[in-house]
Length: 247
Length: 332
Ligand SMILES: Cc1cc2nc3c(=O)[nH]c(=O)nc-3n(C[C@H](O)[C@H](O)[C@H](O)COP(=O)(O)OP(=O)(O)OC[C@H]3O[C@@H](n4cnc5c(N)ncnc54)[C@H](O)[C@@H]3O)c2cc1C
Ligand SMILES: Nc1ncnc2c1ncn2[C@@H]1O[C@H](COP(=O)(O)O)[C@@H](O)[C@H]1O
Image 1 (cartoon, rainbow over the protein chains, first blue to last red):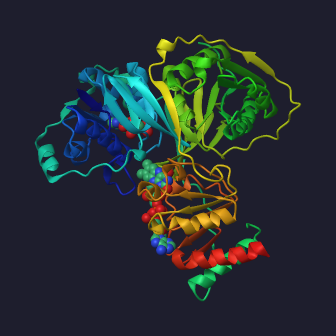
Image 2 (cartoon, protein in one colour):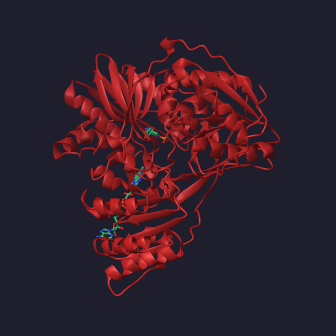
Image 3 (tube, rainbow over the protein chains, first blue to last red):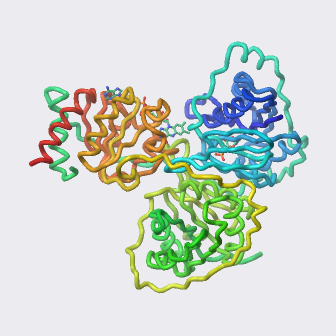
């Protein structure tokens, strides 16, 4: 049994501290829970430019077995299309896999496109926003979160599943895990290694344009309801809401 | 290359009726179609969904396409994908809009990749650029702190739209339009990921999406017991109880109560947030509430900046007095 998790996304937040995208930690956790129950090999896959090793190694310190990096300037500045295409080509090169796990959405663009994109490019069935994944007899049984509960979906393997936080807390790296991760050398692939068309990766492969970013204005006019004591303030709030015809 | 023209809305049903999101989409799409000088159509994919066609027309559609097939009764990606491929191949719309719903967020990305085009997910504003006539797609990024405006280089331009961000037209039952059946044969063998069953997590009382009043608790509530007083307030005001992510993750309330980017999007008259800091991810789910009221002990909390009224204090002391006064006022 073998699992690949197409996870990890570099996020340069405003504080310029890179972290693993939170949903990708859940994807790693989902893979580890499968491995807790049966023999499995977990490969983590990250795409970016100048990927920081401490960040992309986190899945290894959590318990993944191997790390493949698509690390090259040519991969930078892409959109969901160019990212999914390059990841799919890398997965094709990895060759044998039963399950590809992604986060439901990355915490930069909150897109939620790359997982389905990889599945479409590889021609795999795909289940999105999973909270539980059980693997047995060449099939995955997935609980998919919907607004008023969940749906149970069954898919043959290989398949792609995107993972949501309802899965439950991801485990923390152990000291032993961190030590093991230190010893594992990531495999680094350049565009030529995975046979991609250079015009379709990174910024060159974009199909979407970002015209502008802006901060939405907020009203910021809050009336503070006070009182001698918190109790009085509470009562005053009820009176105020009544006056404003909100009750 | 085929000529893409017009706007197509992917319609959904909710409890056998037209889903609120579909009416909202039609309202927003009507304006886009007018600006493009092109027709607005809707499509319903499902089993026994034909009855919804006239409703879509009443809310602004010119043409409604219906793909009715028993295999489409429950949502299954592979089957819906085939249906949409066929419809879009025939209609050739320039813009395809879906709701950011359990179906839309699964179907739109795969559909876009299949048609070798893009999808922009969870848009809160759409407009036609007067110069290029391309669709300007505005969506929150980085958890909602910032908004980005995107365009797509390829047709059809696919976007999903967040609930409550567009306004439906007035329902006009005498509006005229055309309904067209499209037959799609779906070989059950192509449906690889199969729907097995739906497990509804029943929540008591009014649905969050429908409630006029929502009382929400966050990490500051401290435990499952702390939600009892919130439930009491919600009951008094005929509202529903919501929660932030830590309250759900800690198991104080079920996940279906989650409000926010990854939970429910609501727009009630009154949103009472107790012990919630107002993170951008949480606000993504309630920023269209008409009135936000916060009870928080931290005067610097972000929720205070978003609220119309607030009380700065410990909810354990503020809320019981609020509730007592509320009862008194409601009785008088
Ligand atoms: C990709 C992503 C998606 C997410 N999606 C969501 C989502 O959909 N919904 C969501 O809610 N979160 C979401 N989150 C989490 C989000 O970032 C915040 O962590 C979360 O909303 C914080 O919840 P909170 O306000 O309850 O907790 P905190 O931020 O810890 O705030 C607790 C508040 O309670 C106040 N407080 C404490 N004790 C008292 C008291 N006794 N009386 C009065 N006030 C008190 C404190 O002053 C504080 O303001 C998401 C995060 C990520 C990364
Ligand atoms: N650069 C990347 N490297 C590895 N995985 C990625 C990358 N970008 C996106 N993904 C995966 O795709 C998921 C969805 O991303 P997105 O469509 O960008 O929201 C993420 O949670 C990751 O699992």
